[in-house]
Image (tube, rainbow, N blue to C red):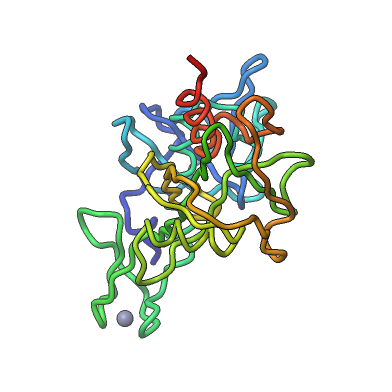
Length: 270
Ligand SMILES: [Zn+2]
């Protein structure tokens, strides 16, 4: 029995409060409302489903469930991936959607114990599963990644990877490895990706990044030495950009862009 079946059965035909995150494969169902998109409310769509409620930073009731292929979609329904949604809904709803998708993916992909293959059971009081046979515990997986500016007076070092949209540059980023601090990960990634040394590594902020389960941790750093040599496997091009001559940048919702905007604000000429 899956975690969702273990949970109290919910019938979304019952009128209730809260937002419904209905997920078909990797796509989320939204309702077109004129020119804008919104999340359906629990009870709005005429089909029963099982799923789970989850808490969130907005203290709104949220319900997530998978929807089957044959689910009858109303005309106003749109199925969109999280990436397609990026600029289309409010930041706080986007973060909730990422949380919903990650919880559901974890639930569906961790139905059996990784140690002894026994079906997992829900662990009460938290988002976790426990094996009734060997007591192994599973939490939703999170993969921390660091993302950072490299600053040199009025210039910022930006790079582009081969899969970026044409002409777009962004801050460098990479996954944290076992056994290193976030600060060490920042310095290692910059060294590996562009052969540059940095100092003065300072925490900036963080952003959940549900592709598929990262947490981006942002830092600012100051250039300390080295000539740019891009790592050919990861970085197609990297260069210094003056604050007044920046290339095409990532979306405003991304922490990469917030880091760059923060650099611009701090280097405003008097
Ligand atoms: Zn087990």
